[in-house]
Image 1 (cartoon, rainbow, N blue to C red):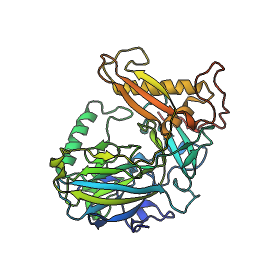
Image 2 (tube, rainbow, N blue to C red):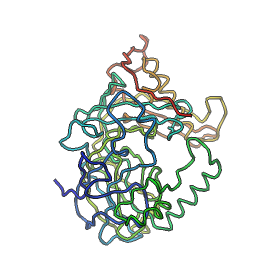
Image 3 (cartoon, rainbow, N blue to C red):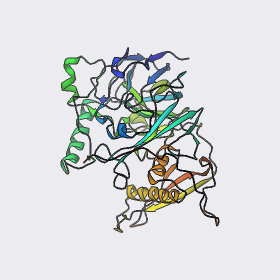
Image 4 (spheres, rainbow, N blue to C red):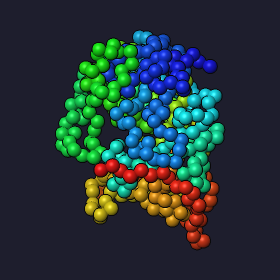
Length: 419
């Protein structure tokens, strides 16, 4: 087993560990360890809410989820010799749930969860149709996930980190804060908000001296959105065997990782839309000197996906176009067309006995494929969502005999939106 450079004790909170990670982006957060190009090492990762979500039949914890505290990131890890303008190579050698811990109160100890966030606490991709909070617990058997809250389905997960990235420079951080602040100012009271400004009170800033936390926390970038440094991209295919090339903006690169997922559908559409868990990830690092200019990668990562994902051979696909539910035509709105494709899939699954929220949770958790199928045929963009038919315990295809009726069981726990 590789050396564990960031160990986590499951009996302790994230802030009480031997090494302290962080939950904001800032160039002044010092590395917890420095590695050399070619080094291989293991990193333990806590799920993004640090144990706030429980293995139970209530969605109250999703309703009250402490969004100001996320994400619980492991790192940063400095890379010897890395300079701004280089490309940092990250190889994912292995990734999985918490080793040797098959049961316990933490997600990753044999189970994980998917949540639909309420409108007044994060929201989701389909927030107008699903304003309340819902939760599904998934149990792990090897690589297979099943749920008492979404019955008669099982699927192999594509285990991956939802969040990886390098530290921003001071100039890049200022750019983020300016453009996101300008967006918030266009509708400052919107729910869910248009963006998340810096927030110092709940910031965790690693090994930075505590007398600097208030100042740095008031500048540091929240970790929810993906940005030029990578970040919370939630790309389900960045699994075992993947190679990612990250732009370097500060000396040492200062790479961080977290937000592990047992599985996820394209788009992570419920916001807490993957199967969230804690676990481990084994990494190898290297650098390409001057790689940003050599390969034209001035921002955002490029990557080579791994080849260990489940081999689904049959799919049932749904399409949507950029027309609202009220019949208003929008111009080439791919976000809207993917929403409509997902809603069509939910409507279809409801005919088999699933409650709409059960179907929605399934689309967030299972390894569905989302695609932009047409973006040039004015005025309608066309998006599609592909469901692997093998994940159902019954024949989900349309037929003359009509839809099989599932037993919905106890259903998905719900907690009404506040406000």
